[in-house]
Length: 436
Ligand code: XUL
Ligand code: CO
Image (tube, rainbow, N blue to C red; front, side):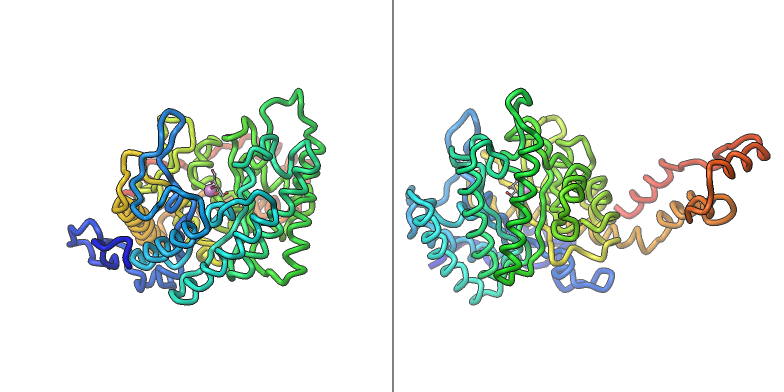
């Protein structure tokens, strides 16, 4: 039984190809900076968008045509959807996927029932993983859709809701572990506030921190070795989310003793909502040893919300890959397409076009970034730009071997300081464009 009978396995056909269902840039076996592209990029399909996206928006009903859906939320339907997902991933050649507990399995009238549903689906996922070699990049729990989470989950003002969320995450970590998941993600969902007048920020932050500590303690107790990831997002659904951006997340991680326990999963559209370039968020995380994984998508700069579009802008992917290559890749993280087809793109085939575009844009950006790095001009320029710190008084500053008194004496003698080199921004932008 095939759910995509008209689509063959998507293959690398190279630049000459005009086949819309082929890769022009992504050759999994091509080696870039010593790694096969497949191993370097670790592309992942996001179950929630690709399998559960309905096309619904605040103004309109679902639009997606998904012939395999029977309109129910039954266990049988959930199992069939897993069959569809694995056929899709096999045809795409993607080796990883990610899910929330409630995307893959139906919720239940009680926690017990929900857990049993998740176990039943995990059996099915496990069979498919074993049969195909496709792996779980990360698991997570949906702590935002159910009405019980209207005030948040780990930051809810209600202790019973906190307890429910903890039980849900405990189970999600266990299932992630069972399925060999390589990471576990915390995204705020509703961990934030709409109005400070009704909010005890101290307690909410402490509760969020204790939640993460308990999650990690439990993971350790059951032998889960995967990486924990905190995913920054400044707003939506709450006005202010505590996981605002990489800097806010890292401050939280340090303030509550979670360093070395939790890294970051950086998402493009979240970066732009926070007023940052994706490259800024990636670089900020990387230099502090906290770049764990990415949610690859893009927003629309003319819209102020999380549009979760597939990334197609090669300039964007090139900038991402400049940082990712500098780190030597993302493993055990990967490039997860937290992206959805537009509600106007309602046919199953659009899922292929969307993922092919994202994968090719990243493969293309990878090759461009590698070429820029091989050229060396960019790096050399930056090194030279800070060259005054490599000797003399600069070297002393860098090594922490000076004082204000010494710097004053130095300057009193010298009289004036003048920056004597151009930033050459335009020249460097031209250098990048040479490789595009
Ligand atoms: C929401 C978002 C989530 C997380 C996982 O904006 O990005 O899908 O990636 O909960
Ligand atoms: Co995301």
